[in-house]
Amino acid sequence: MSEILKVENLRAYYGQIPALHGIDVSISEGRVAALLGANGAGKTTTLRAISGVIRATGTIEFDGRSIVGSLPETIARLGIAHVPEGRGTFSRMTTEENLRLGAITRRDERAVVEDMERCFSYFPILKERYNQQAGTLSGGEQQMLAIARALMLRPRLMLLDEPSFGLAPMIVNDVFDILRRINREENVTMLIVEQNTSKALELASEAYLLETGRIVVSGPAGEIRADESVRRSYLGY
Amino acid sequence: MELFVQQAVSGLANGAIYALMALAVVMIYQTIHHLNFAQGEMAMFSTFIAWQMLAWGVPYWIAFIITIAVSFAGGFLIERVIFKPIHNAPVLSYIVAFIALFAIFNSLAGFIWEFTIKPFPTPFGKAPLLESGLLSMHQAGMIGVSVLLVVFLYLFFRYTRVGLAMRAAAENPESARLVGIRVGWTTALGWGMAAAIGAVAGLLIAPIVFLEPNMMLIILLYGFAGAVLGGLTNPAGAVFGGFTVGIVEALAGTYIPEIGNELKQPIALFMIVLVLVFKPTGLFGRKVVQRV
Image (cartoon, rainbow over all chains, first blue to last red; front, top):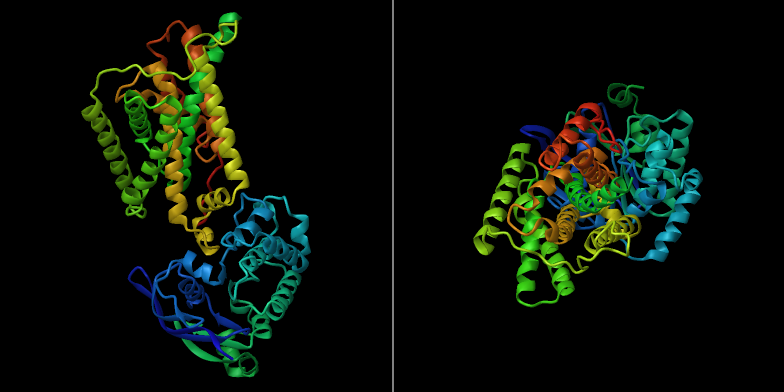
């Protein structure tokens, strides 16, 4: 299987302070990788560096093409959809407008309408909220809207930043089930950052453990889940 | 009663122009969160361009359209050349840039066209509208063109892709980038549209205040008052605010003898102060909550 995302020696800074000290991540097409670690380990920073929101050095290749230093809008147009921390909802706009914005770079109006219907098949609640202001949606609904909005881009790679954040446990299960379906049915590769480690390791096939800007453990998700010492020292459960 | 209606309606005509200036100011405020002090001077310069074309014998409406197009391009360029490079700069850099623009346009207009007051033609005629004598044809034209423009802008922002992208970029620039919107371009587009709206305002008000490099100073002040009154975060509110300021100005000048014509201008400032003290977000503005 070919690598869709290859990150090597990725370094990023917040001002003068280094946040990432050379990170290597690679994902094969169609797979799900999890990026785990404590608060402040650099998980969000890694996603933000890949999608171009913050400047970084090193190698980032998407489908064999270097995207280091590109603008976020350019990277999005290549087919990388970033569902950011805090969901990035356009809260004063309706659900419909949020979904249309997800597809704003696309010209195939008919396919966009079909895709919107497909989003509703994953998230039926969004259809009920069609004309509602997105800011008035519940946290779970906003998370679903954020994922649906990302899907409207027809992405090849989705970067998901804590999709379980602030959601009730039952909703978390729903969201992860849907992510699994999206991964299988749409063949969308995913890189997922999560605090909910067990959920993320169930979904992912590979996992990377970050600690203070470095990857300390990586490997198949199943092995990491089974490794008692890794679980205790890094994952805390 | 007749006097009241007459003054209110004539206030509505000036209010239309204040509404357009308020809209132009809010349009830029939405994207860069600063008030463009030079908005009026840009509009004045546009009006001079139209005057020059008219002096060369270009028919009014053709000159009108060319002026709008040139102003749009000018606003777009100003953003690209001056404001894009400083987009991360502190507020003082913006203020200096605005003051510089103000001075440049003001003295450039004086240099090219001189500071003498010039009459400016109206395409609608000065005759009274119908028999009523409530409004002149030109005042009716001011209201009509302004309302048409506002409706057009509403439809543009509500129903077009570009309009949607511009709204998204103004509301949440980072999310907008993540869905692929070129936020730099939508910002420049906003500047172009603001400059074009200002040009329409300048062309419509020039027959009344006469053309000279300082003609938009007071108009912009009223525009600011309208924008602050309606709420800087709400374009529709700004339009409403502009009309309200126009009516209040006319009625206060008529009914409060101490104000008369001489003290009409401080009314705008007085309204700004009142709003800022009692309702800083304006009538229809949103409170911007910052998460920390």
